Amino acid sequence: MSATTGNAGRGSARTAAIFLSPMMAVLALVAVWPLARTIWFGFTDASLTAPGDYGLVGFANYLEAYDGAWYGILADPTWWRALANTLIFAAASVTLETVLGIAMALVLNADFPGRGWVRAAVLVPWAIPTVVSAKMWAWMLHDQFGIVNAGLMALGVIDRPVAWLADASTALPAVILVDVWKTTPFVALLMLAALQTVPRDCYEAARVDGIPAWKVFIFITLPLIRPALAVAVVFRLLDALRVFDLVYVMTGNAEATMTLSVHARQQLVQFQDMGYGSAASTLLFLVVGLVTILWLAVLRPDRSAAGGRHGGAGV
Image (tube, rainbow, N blue to C red; front, side, top):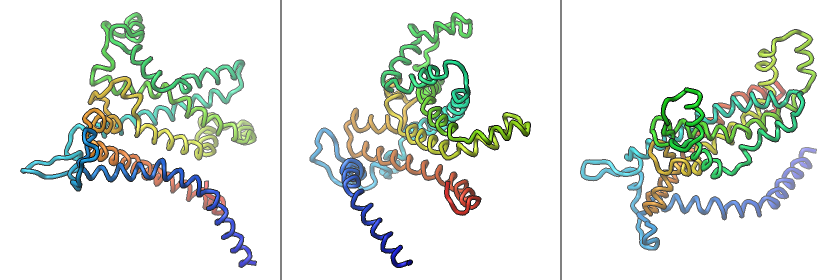
């Protein structure tokens, strides 16, 4: 019996491997190979001005001591500023999008007239291409012609126009708010799908027992939608850590909002330093991977506990 089961399992594994092999080959061609080449160029002095003429420089692009001083990306204050901007952007945008997305999903999950139209309208910001959204908001936040300044001045909130994207103190918060405006519907859509899978009996029992609405949300709704919430946060965290188009269209290469992707693009395209730019891209990959692994490690105790409560079945 066990031998038969083992043979069947091995046969299923071979069948799965056969069906997955074309996809794995394509993935290796379009992802693994370019990544490996990027990592390789990070150890060279390659340049776009002479792409065929380069040599190995070891870790010089990352960190090197020369004549009593340190050089390389890890000694570059601009890279560290880009790293800080990226982490701040990711933390702030994902947190706000998660909170607002859950609130929006709770509203859209309720029964009210015109709910279908409201759901469709909510998805409009997410449906607009990022470049279009960035350019639209750049004009709306313009200090002389923007509708945001005009509206705030009409309400008496400000007494003179504010250069939202030119001032270092307001540029990054403005970009974060634009990202929240655009991507919150994505989180709301995932949360709405999760809410619709919650059994109605749970809410009916809570209503009969007279449990307050906030306790129903904390002890019933939130635990049941936690797997979908974890997926939404992971997706948004990955996108936020590697954000490029929104930031670059709105503020270009400004250091106040420069992210790791913008910094890598500047080194590779504008400065045409393929070796240095590849090293910057490799560090971006490592930062994204490290933050994602840490987030999954935070979620692992929840999965383990859930597995123990449900007889070993993981969430």
